[in-house]
Length: 241
Image 1: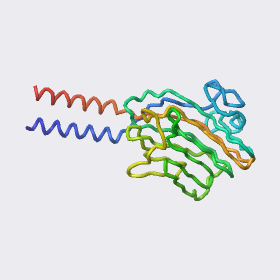
Image 2: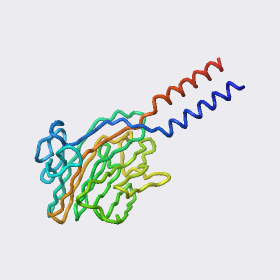
Image 3: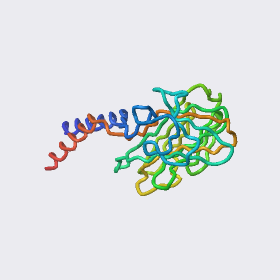
Image 4: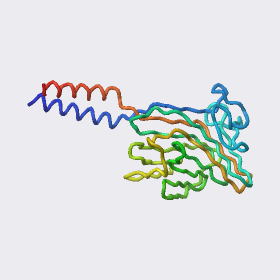
């Protein structure tokens, strides 16, 4: 009985350690740097990026890290998107974190969305004074004080592919989160995103925004905790035998 009680405590401690030590494996990292194969100029058709050409350029004007970033220039008419599809080995639907650094403009909004197949998981709209999203219901927040157009901010979201929900999403200190998460707008077979996109649709050709350090991560169990839980499992199997 004492051994059983000890092992139950052991398993409980391992489970707590697992819950408190979430670790992520990076499956995609883009810094738009020369060593990654990016050259200055239009990004569409570079390294697998697709979309409508015209307003998405790799630039050396500014960067959050390194020397290059992705620049979005507005235009009076027309919609422009830049998409990047990637492979993500996540058959079990483990939680994911998608993030990037954002340098806002004084006017206008930049739209970002992860997608699976043809389905948009969530549409995020990022600006210096407001932050909103469709997921699928529309949510909106004013950002106070306004973001500084000379500073870089992290934007991102945490996904739960199994339940097809966005657990939370954020821009700097502005965060949306809900106890039950926000349902995906649309999704494919797995709920795991296989692409990201940036989209511009402006009425002001003076609008400029920058993106850098794009990252997609998949949560992995703590190796030590997995070992403890496996050991506990073997113990119970032996007891049953």
